[in-house]
Image (cartoon, rainbow, N blue to C red; front, side):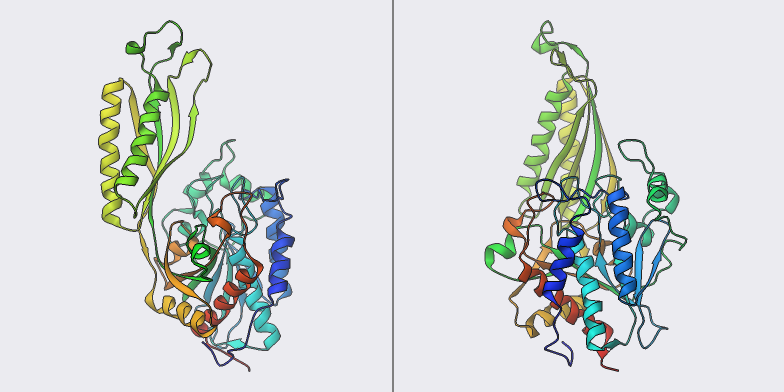
Length: 416
């Protein structure tokens, strides 16, 4: 905590910005569809840039569209403390996922400006490109490239379902910046986010002090069987790709249950190549993933799935190809930054608990190169990646207050 223990953000103003930005890509059901690098994403980026500049920050944009809004500190020779999140959403997303952390960071700067507080090190509010991974793969695209996990050329060449490259999409909305990727330095990073899970709400706890995050492996798969007539092909002669996928889905589920509670597995996409009511499916493309905070469990899940696939393919006389397209090791956040988050929650008198993040976030990427941690606040029924996603105004403000005092603890703040 700082020497300004009574300092708080303007919760009403934070909420107003959340509701204002929700109009960019608003859906009839009250959610948000703001796919990365879409016109809606471009519009909210324009809003964000203008708001940051109005708060006295200088905004830079790198080649992948990552946005960095810099607030000067007393010692400009020191790398800034980064904080923020993302502005893009899932196809049927909500008003809080990602953007709460970005707008809370903006609100922290506004609060510091009004209080006349200067930090020792500069502050950098971030909007990372394509955190969601719903239009382009991989997720965390901008932050992973920033830390060197992907090359800029690779990312710019990635295509969406319509064949549009990430480079073309950036050009279309005017956010392919001149700043080389990875050149924005940081001394640390903090990210506020809704939990996207049910624990905090169920326990009546306001703040999740995120100590670590799950490792993730994503796969693209394809099953090749043989198309034949649904009415005249006997059951024992079929090479049904969909039936094989059904077994594979249950295998993913079974492995995750077997190694729970520290494991989850999902098949989230499946598409029959040439679907027809009276044709046995001959080819199917699908996605699969496993997540676990334990690297050993993650490796066991992968080996288990490989064995299941071999058995299913042999018995059903189909070919199953499974290609890993993204892998992220479990993340352990920096103890010092975690302690700063915990200390801020304690000093503010907010209920809090240690927690593991089940979802991936940009802070996971940054943790590979600088001290980093996260702050969680509850979301209703733990629902996210859904138009019904909701959070309480008071919880959003409380999370922003913890972010404010964590930033002051890490960046050093006093009235000039």
